[in-house]
Length: 93
Image 1 (tube, one colour):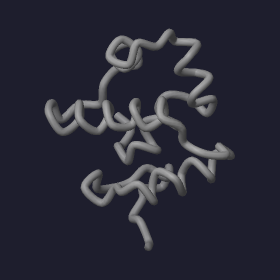
Image 2 (spheres, rainbow, N blue to C red):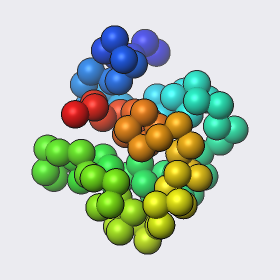
Image 3 (cartoon, rainbow, N blue to C red):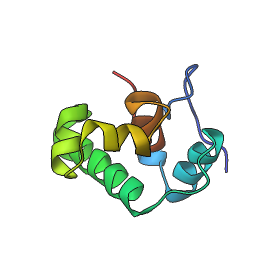
């Protein structure tokens, strides 16, 4: 499947996101696999965006997933926006 992305590689339409997109982005970042904690963060980001129309802040994400900032950085070493948000199929701000 071909996904439409902007010039920075973010998915243009979050509605086009699927699990395969997330797995593909994760592989692109060099992650060997997405574990339960990754999927929980991704699901939170997508749900928050669907409810509010906004991308959750890093602090909202940590609080909602009972993670320290260091835990989130370990899960997504490529960064919050370029890692977690991009894998979740959401656009940068």
